[in-house]
Image (cartoon, rainbow, N blue to C red):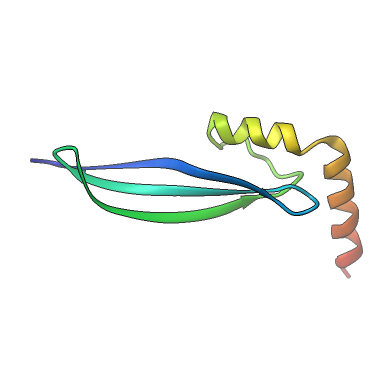
Length: 83
């Protein structure tokens, strides 16, 4: 039986006042349809980031929560924190 590997976005969380979108991706290795291992990777999509390479589901969440107001407020805070 051959091993197969697949990746799936299994958790999307929205956190903080600037609506950071945390994305957890699971890498699943299977043999004959039976899961052998599962490992995780997380990344964050911040307001104003390019999310065009994300899955359709992540893109929809980002489009909903990263409004113009949120992006503007996040960029203003970032500008204050950058020397």
